[in-house]
View 1 (cartoon, helix red, strand yellow):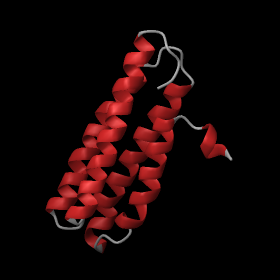
View 2 (view 1 turned 30 degrees about the vertical axis):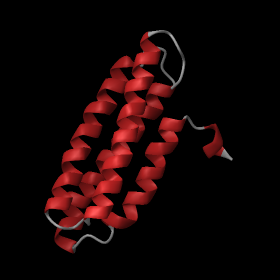
View 3 (view 1 turned 90 degrees about the vertical axis):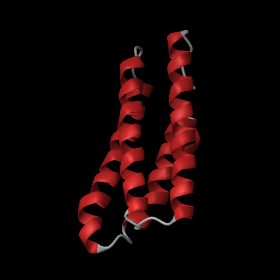
Length: 119
């Protein structure tokens, strides 16, 4: 199974995406195609940077970019919560997952600077 071969950070980001997309699908129509679409795209961008970093020797720039994109995602999800399209429980769970991914990005970046291969 492919998932077992994925790096933990990539698996965590992918699982977050799979968990969040159905919740975005429940946004009211006026926000589903604006804010919901942006959140979904942003999460795909983070995942894309992490996958690219997996295959690069010098991945520091890609990990920095993934971290910036994750920060943008944090604000988008916060806006969804403040606009009352994400419940407090869902928002809290999303924040926990984003924090975990952010910590893994930081750990991977630190490890890659010291010469290790993966998080």
